[in-house]
Image (cartoon, rainbow over all chains, first blue to last red; front, top):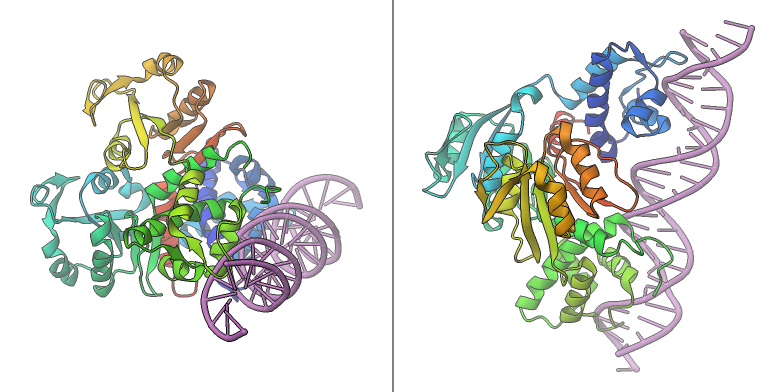
Length: 212
Length: 212
DNA sequence: TAGATTGTTAATCGATTAACAATC
DNA sequence: TAGATTGTTAATCGATTAACAATC
């Protein structure tokens, strides 16, 4: 078991996929799986899968492969699927509402416990059984209710301010849908979903398709 | 001017940010900018910026830096901002509707020209001045109207089928919001936005925060 | 001219791929 | 035992960072 260095982000990003495909094998009543077979299913190479899994210990048996159930459990634990994570959404515009409705919070063991917005027209609306509260209620809410993840769906202008408020009030995970490069302290975990950037990247790749 | 190798994706992904910050400098009436100053603003290193820009030719002048206007124009051209890209959305559920409402198509020179869904309850709805059509109209629509980008917001089950239809009918860019790893031919440009994976990555990073 | 800053080559870092002894 | 497959070390590949001669 090595833990000298940080686990690389690319490894972390592949874990959800391993999880998904292992679940499929489990449903198909497969007991043991080789890195090779998991590779065929998931599109990664056997080498890479073994290399990735070794970050988390010796999970397989030479000659036999991996026990599907055990490996799935292990990865679930690494992903933290056992613990319920509490979230709030800040900004209940199109994106905020879509996130609220889209994510299958139950299945992934998340719980959405609050939605906040500055727009008086939106405050009071009910989204997924949750009443949208005014942004001015945010701090007092956080003082009472410990929250794990803040989902920032505000306008560009307000994103950094909201992020600061969240961090100051004990939130350690931020899922950022605004187009701003948020500045947060080292301790905070930040995951960005930048739709504008993604769309422009697609466009650029298309534009250069011929010689790229 | 070198063009031996493909331009790396990481470079492409940084271009929208350069574009954004250059626009800021232009608004502030800055004429010339050094890679150093752009670095301070954008959070990249001066070295990286120069390295990136050199993929597209010699754009600056030693000793003087880059002309803001010229560089902005060049990057706009690289991103393909001059051409109008036509898009359709397939799947008008929460995500599809959010995308339709969220993206500032006008500013980015995109045009949303069609929305398709299989659900009879949604067909006929008006979103952003566009009437949602039945998915069965998709092929005949594509035969008449050339489309650049297809935005897949369907359920997991239908995503691959839709992708095939799009590619078969001449679409070269796919913006995929489904959680499926789509298989498309080499020629097609695919950009994935996998919200489930992003959320699980965030969770995993939080879970491992202490020793990660 | 002296200082600033580029374009580009070289060095470093990190991630992926290949290879193989150890093990079932 | 022979074949399969792991864990892990070594080799390769690619991207970032550093360095510097050339240029304004």
